Amino acid sequence: MSALRSAPLALAFLFAVGPLLSQQKNQTQVAPATPDPATTLVGQGNQLYLAQHYKEAISPYQQALDLEKKKSTLSPATFRGLVDNLGIAYGLTGDLKHAKETFEYGVSRDPYYPLFHYNLACTYAEMDDLDRALAELGLAYQYKQNMIPGEEFPDPRTDDSFQRYLKNRRFLDFLQSVEQPSAGKTDSLRDSSNPPAIRGTLLRGSGAPIVGAEVTLQVFSDEDCAKLFDAGSDSPENAAKLRKCSRDLFTEPSNDKGEFAFTGVQAGWYAVRFLWNIEPKPSTGPSADHVSGFSVVYAAQKDVSGRYDTLSQGPVFHFDAAQDYRADFKY
Image (cartoon, rainbow, N blue to C red; front, side, top):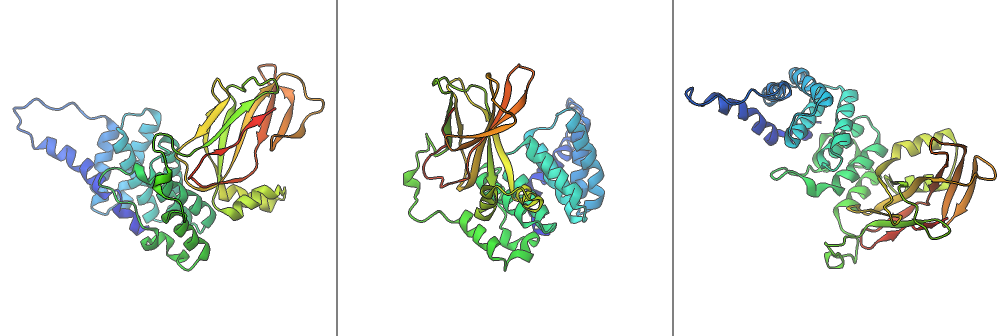
């Protein structure tokens, strides 16, 4: 993971020198407010990290993160630097389990920051888990525009974590697909005020909107993973493969018109599902039906609202990021 080290260094340096500058102030000036414990621990960790004492930096960094989990006090930039440096320190000392947990927590708090996804991809690559590495690397490229000014997006081809895959055709094809625009698709086709998105409208048979449905966008690492999902195989082996090569990307409720929209999504393979309630009891349950291209599964028992939970799962589709994809549903 040595190539990862350069990404957060400049940011970490800024964090480290802040306390030193304050110590150099004239003693006659009013003393600055005492920093909170998490900030102090981050500063201690930064000094050790910058000296390349990665193992020693883990303890203050982890203490800072534990405090941050209990009560958030760090600025967004400081939080990003903490997670990046702590996760990398774990990785460089061979503790991939804790590196993975650290970056996963970062993603849970700041899902659009690309380096969390990139570093998580590196961690999976070190674990020799190419499916998950590609899934996270795809998200890193998708959110590349969210880099902090002054940061550079790493090149997987020169990163030690991915060296074992430099002759892997699947890895190389993936990099080519995310680094080069599709043929014939230019920026002139895009409307920045209304970017292409995955959209849909959920309606009942009467035409009334399905409001507040929990709509989830699922992403697949590549076409092979998407085909695995589409095959509908219930074998434990395929289910395990699918868990590794796919993940839930976004979840949002349908609005008062029954509409949903997932924007800022890169080209790739996806599926949409949503969870909602129906009032009439299904004739049998659990039972399944097919409506508007969705597989609809009804629960057998009422939930706390007195209604019946219903899961509607749409088919796999390819989103080209050049025009809207619609996943409309009418029950």
